[in-house]
Structure formats: structure tokens, C-alpha cells
Image (cartoon, rainbow, N blue to C red; front, side):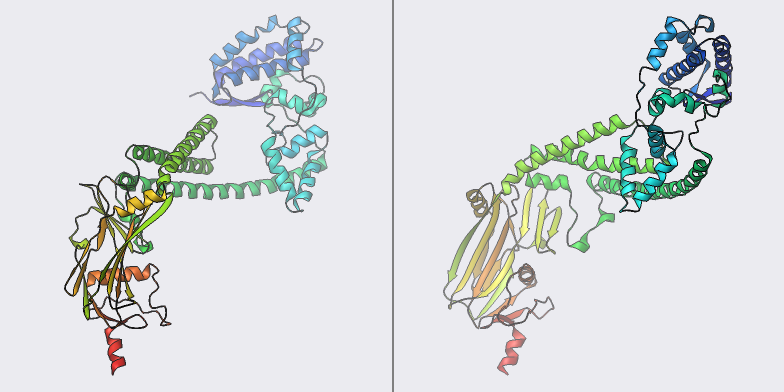
Length: 538
């Protein structure tokens, strides 16, 4: 493979292979020999160099290696050296093209930079040494970091003076003198420009010494900045990759084993399955697809930007970033509209209460579970609020079963009262009450035993609407109450759910699941363990 050579044309660096370099060198040497002794020849040579740089840039020369084909294509555009005349109308047109703008414009100066070239560009624009601008920024940085924020703002706002035309705008009329201070007296040749590049030096020796100190400090800060970016990029990649893998495993492979959240009282469930119970069938696929886009795109962007921070590369990804942002914003908007439309179904709260009075209460009341969760066939379970509200799913018949809570209160008379309180949410209060009234729950009284269901169900073809059923049993004072494990668990759930348990006694007595501890007595202060009543009687 032929070796490549770096050259500077019109203030832009190019890489050129050895064969193309020999052809370009001979071509520029012929132009230099022909025009250097003519009036205005130096300006024409400079204009030709800038034009050659523009052609190479249009051919993608800054992104790759200039080949012989690139040079021959450029020569076909510029023309042969013998056809170029310094005093011709063609030269006047080029002069007009390259020198039409004589006013100054502020840029970042890539030829005199420590961090980004902001101070060098300001110095060139104002015609002063950049070292004074740098000292001024340091001075302002000592006052609430004002100089740092101003510098960052100018770094973002000012473009980089990459080509010769932009540098001419940056330096103004003094551009040629600045560009040739390091040159020998007389006109600088095109061959010399290719061989060694154009060196711009605008500071005095003292200023250069101070600038070198700044450059050394800038390199240290740049190294620190790069280390910080690498660490931040690694964090982005690891975080994005972890959440991406979690997202794929949970929602596609349905494998939550490594992502359990039981410690927080919430079991992992699958969004695609749960959506079938809470939204309309037509909306569920759209919610899934839009949720996939809304979640996945930021994770991929996080990983991509992390890789860019680590390897510090440039890519023409602006159009992709803008397109991705537009797609993501549109997806968020569409998802929000669908969720809002579905969320209207939960706008109002409604409840119903049914009461049954049993005049003759047995001295000892047994409360036992009838239809139990242990006997229920279900595929998935969701536990919320510290396992007090459990939802069980049956995928075969789309059955939905929810745990019931039990309250035991003191009756105001000698009657046994059984209240079933149902609650739901709907588009209106009446809609919510209708849903609550349709919830399916049953209990039965047989002699001295009250059989209650551990769960209630939702009617077929109905959606989950934050439904809740609570069974409240009021027993007369002095009644001995016996629980089995199922009903004791239901009572414990009600206690944890915020029911005012024994508020008059001044202390909190928890339900225990210890064997032999299921016998309680309704006293004047509330429900007490049977052992406590025995101690009082003694």
C-alpha cells in the first residue's frame, strides 16, 4: 500500500497518496513558475490553492485519502497552468469570488487554540493578542464562574474557521499579513504551501510563552475531561445495556427470575397479559407497540452516546438523531392520548353497601373460609400494598379474581350484622356504582358458622376497575369468635390496610397466625384474645 502524506491547502489538512502528491506538486510548481513574477500573481496563486481545497473537500478529501483520480478531476476543473493568466478576466472573477467579503466575522480559531479556539478567534476579530483574552476569561472565572459559562456559550455559538474564506472573514484585511509573518520576504509559493503548510503566528514572544503555559494547563484539563467522559460513557453503556437486557427478558422471554421485586411487596407481572384485563382489546396492541418505542429508543440512544464518549469519534448522525427524536416524541404523544382515553374509565369512584341482619347471634361464632384461593386455578398473581390486595389471573377463560378483606366490629345491639361493601371506578359515578354492584361475592350462614369467600370475581367480558370488596361483621359484646387460617389471614389484611383496630384501648394488638391463637372475644373495648378474657375473669 502506498504511503500517505499530509498537506495543508487553504488552511485545511488533507491526506494524499504518494502518486497523487507527485502530480499535485508538479501541477502547483508549474502554476507557481508561471504566475509568481506577474503582477497580482501571489493573490492568484492563493486563490487557486483555496479553490483546490474546496474541490478536494467536495470530493470527500477530509474524510479519506486523495488519490490520483481526485487530482486529475481537480485539474480538469481548474485547467492547465498555461491557460491561467494573472491579469485575465477569469482571474478577476476568481478574485471577486474569493474576496467578495471584506468585513470581519467572529469564528473560533483552530490555528490558535488551547481548548476550542474561542479566545484565539476573539483575539483575531479584535486584532489583539489572544493571551489577553484568555487572561480576561480566567479573571471572570474567579467571579462565580462567570467566565466559564460565557466561554461555553461562545464555544457552542461560534463556528470553527475551517477553510480559507472563513479565516479571511475572521482576520479581515490583515489576513494576508498574518498568514505570511513566518514566511520569507516576497511571495510565498504554492509548492511551499503544499510542502510545509501555512503557519499563523499572531502573538509576541511573551504572549507565546504565556500561551504555552496555557496550552500545558489545557492539556491537563483535557486529559481530566476525557477521563471523566470515558467514565460517564461506560456508565451510560452499562446502564443502558442492563435495562435493555432486562426489558427484553421480561417482556419477550417472560423470565423475571433475576429481576424479582418481592422485597418491595410487588410481584412482577407481564404488561401484555395485564393489558388485556384493564384496557379495550383494540387499544392493547397500540399501547404495547408505542410503549416498546418509548422505552427502547432512549436506551439505544444512551448506549450510543456512551460509546461516542468512550471512543471520542465524530459521526454524521444529526439527521438520525432528529428523526429518532421526532419518532419518540410522536410515540409519547400518541401513547399519552390513548392512555388518557382509557384512563377516563377511572375518572369517578362509586360504591354500594348491602346489609343482612341476623337477630339471634350464637354465643360462639365460627368464621371459616368457603371458596379459598388455595383451591383456585390461576396462572398469574399480582400482589400490591404489602400483599393485602392480591389479583389472580386465569388465562384460559380470562377470569379475574381479587382477594377480599374482613372487618370485625362490635354490634350496637344483640344482632349479628353482615355488611358487604363493594367499590369500583368508572367514567361517571353512576357507571362506577353499576360496576361495583356487578362484582360477584358470596357468603352463607349455617347455624353458628359464617362461611365467607376469600376472593371475589369480576363479571365476564368486564375490565378491572380498581375493584374492591370488604366484608364487615358486627358481633354483640361477649361473643366468642373463632377463626380458621383463611379468615384470620383476611382479618390481618384488613388490619394492615388501615382499619382502626381497637383504637379505644390505647394500644395496638396485632393478629397472630400462631396455632391455637385463633379464638377471640368481643369486649366493650373491642376484640380481644380469648386468653386475655380468661386472665380478667381470674
